[in-house]
Image (cartoon, rainbow, N blue to C red; front, side):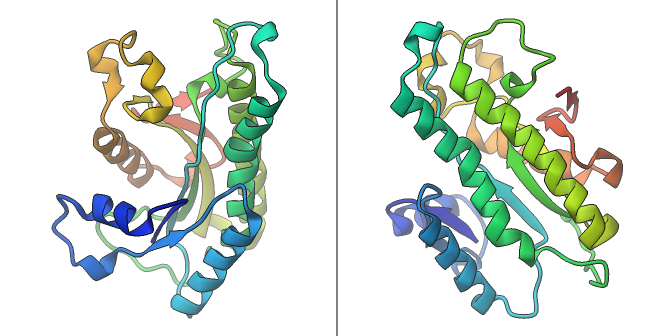
Length: 229
């Protein structure tokens, strides 16, 4: 199950391109994380579509970037948009999709390519680390990602009480990925540090599959290294 704000069929075609899977394995729903009703509608569809099932692996990855190099460059409307997408978006996904995660009494299925626990993963960034902030700037983006780390910790505390070790929350840093979000920095990023979406996705899956419950509630980069808060 995946989502797209626009062109649902085009998104589905792009996801399936190059994959050796049955087309009916992938369903794409229309969702805009700045519109709560679309999130609620997607959750309602999933509840009807997957009756009796639970959510095993979820990625909450909405994100935009308006880089500010000095306080004078902060624009209220762009900063507000950043928090709506980067912070409140995942917060809404948490609200509507956490009920699909397993409970303490749930019997988890096992299999190749699955982590030992159900995982709700939210997309953070290294620049969201207060400890690691040595360059400054990017005020709204940094703050929106710091909030993701806090949300992840709080969600994981909640899951400890409802699911025990059967579900956990983590935050992830994918590296610098060659997408529209990072376009302004393609030329200034060394080639070996500018990742394709496919490479980054594979690395993050490997990180999650290799993670135990000891890694819960924390932020991890694409190499499986912990990023301090």
